[in-house]
Length: 330
Image (cartoon, rainbow, N blue to C red; front, side):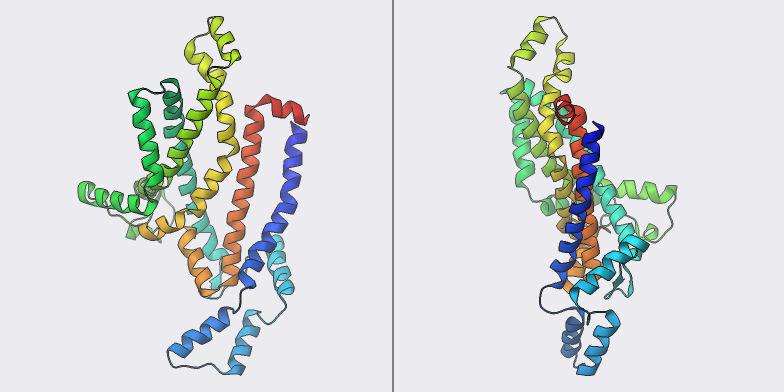
């Protein structure tokens, strides 16, 4: 097991190097840069920048250097000093902008993931055990409904319900008076009061997918001989179900857990814009639109790191869940 863990951790290093290269060059390679965008916006207002001014701006932002030099300075500052560069559009260090947004995104993603587990796993198990019953058909229908309804439409419906029937102010993860307030018990409670709408919205599609996955896998496991053998020994049905077939049915779910987490992080942009959430999605979209290279590359890098870490956690959970993997890896 230790060898398995160490091997997975070693694999992370070249993966992160490749991710950092792709994150930077995907933003830097398209034609134009932040200074070109400034020149275009100034021209629309009738304030044309001279060639000397454009050259001076590129020099000030470090955009006149070769891309490899820019990348090396950027990644070296991140590794040695935790400095993600300077946001051209916000005129602030990227570190001052990224951590709070990334933290709120992580909180929202984890809350949505827990929501998926709490709702989907019991329903998937019940639907498999009671397959073709009325309850199974109801849950299956709800599953297809969750997959079919766009997240932004569900967000609008829940915003209306929360405001019209509960009198709750909607939009954002905090009330106006708590947005810039320091962290305290009141701010945490305010966050929890606003978290349920995006949590349900983002968790709905994932819940529907997990229900169908667990149901299908468990239906395949229930008729197998090891289940019949355990049942013939007089083991209680609930204990038998949880100890053997459910554990095996969870393997594909655990191995694909990283996909769910990445989908939650990357798929929350439209929902974040609709709900006005202070997460990474709207800020990343703005950085891509304005060609704010350091901001966009840093966000893509951090979200990719979350995906890599999620893959590691998924592998470790799968090794813990399935002894065959531990034995195979020595």
